[in-house]
Image 1 (cartoon, rainbow, N blue to C red):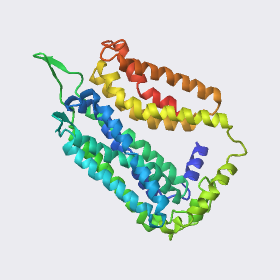
Image 2 (cartoon, one colour; image 1 turned 30 degrees about the horizontal axis):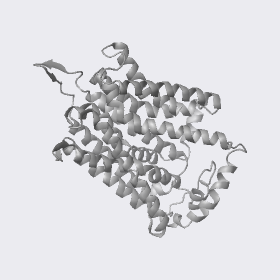
Image 3 (tube, one colour; image 1 turned 45 degrees about the vertical axis):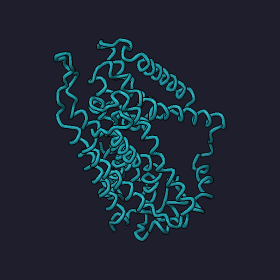
Image 4 (spheres, rainbow, N blue to C red; image 1 turned 135 degrees about the vertical axis):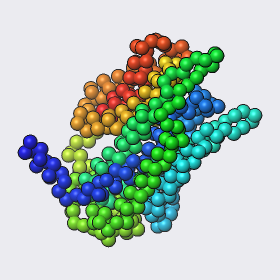
Length: 396
């Protein structure tokens, strides 16, 4: 008990909890919008003209949103002297706030395109909401390198909560269970609160994230928790650095070190690898594996999940979506304590993922009459492996 207290005391030494909380709320703004939209799918597919195909269109809109980080990269390459990361982050978070607010009022707005009803407005808002998440990988995460390394963990906790919090809200909301038949028509019970209320809550979280970043970027006390510009840029993989307060750092000053950073970063990474590097074959295999896992986890699974789960009922679909979002931060937390670095363990996990992928693809192809439909066993299997266990295994 005494050792645990000493470890806790050592962990709290030299940190300001306000910065931790601000970093957490800042991180929550990264993917809370995208995760919020996907956990609402069990309710959205009921009224959308696209019906079960709506997740496929949403996945396409999210992938197109990668134009955000591409635009940022091009702007950084050709107009680096005019680049101020803080202005970009303010703009991205503001887009997230506006798109979330508009979603709460126009999520069910239907337009007619070529004589057919379509959720064009909703998909456009999906695109702008997804820009926040896609661009956060090249903006939010790198921004935290200007602070002491201990605060990066707080940011990552917040980013994990961006999937966990919407899932908890969706579970509390419910979907009213499976429909009942009345006059040959399905009748759905109302959820605990509407989709509009849900998106308004997501908007509030985005506002809190925007406010957290504004305080993090401007409060003098927060600036005192920053590190020197040279340490932040020239040695990004550091484990030790000076903790001397650097309250006069400006992002414009840091940009002047970018050229040095590019030349120095490779040697820094090598020096911190403890003399052990990956062979070309293994690194290629790992990159290919990461590409396949990302393709299925972020592209294929979200787009076909309605076809693989809805035949088992709305409750099964609801649980698969929400538990899947909750499993992602849990899996990342698990990977910290149970890392797998050997070829054998990675191969075993990859093989296990292949089984999950094959079953989910089979249920999608055979929809609406997949294996074990209308059975409790079928529901348990699809809820367990459709997304939750896939996230846990891949992150581990």
